[in-house]
Length: 274
Image (cartoon, rainbow, N blue to C red; front, side):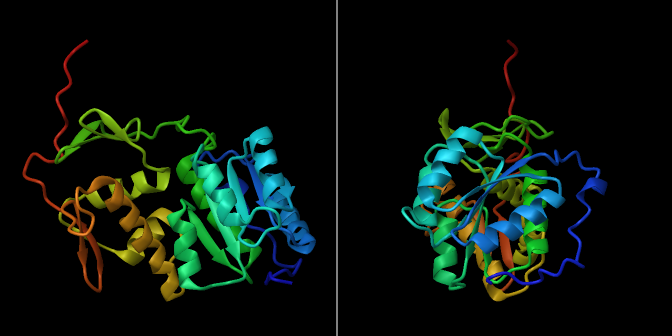
């Protein structure tokens, strides 16, 4: 069985004590063609307080997604009819719902491919259901309910409207525009942007980024690759020339730093009354 740590003596995490306002009846769509995996995940996630729906192939996953509008999708890569990458591609064309990939193949190239398609996290099999619970909870706490839609239903308490060079960043709406044209960022991409520009010029280690955004410390070298993939995606959307970045700089062997765009770079943008 491609899961580990299935002992019934190991209870699921007590999410009811969290106090962070997470809605524990959030709906999780589990997509896996192995009945044993589905049974274990349904049991564990229901005990953790989630509502769980299941699909055993890619086509059924899309049907259930459109009918149920889940808050998060746990998606196996190797699926009948449509594989997980194809399902992710379809979902990302219409939705910002968080997606966690599962795969029996732990190749870095495959992990990068999944993240490039817009997945929020990637968990290689065999894995601990307890670790999956923790990652689901971290993501839902960060993005809130209603993330299956293109617009976040519960905007964060941002500090206002900021300017990064020719970009205007609205931290309340979690939107970025250039020349009044909106640049579509996923929730995780925007959170990365906020983290890097919170203290312009400070070097943010990759391990810190991983813990801040994904909620777990790096356990293997491939974990830090998640950060590199997301930085590359963010550069591809924001930088005029991603190969020669001006906004987000690489500090070799350490992490990333946001470029100081001038003393007034992060000052609030004046908004005319009315």
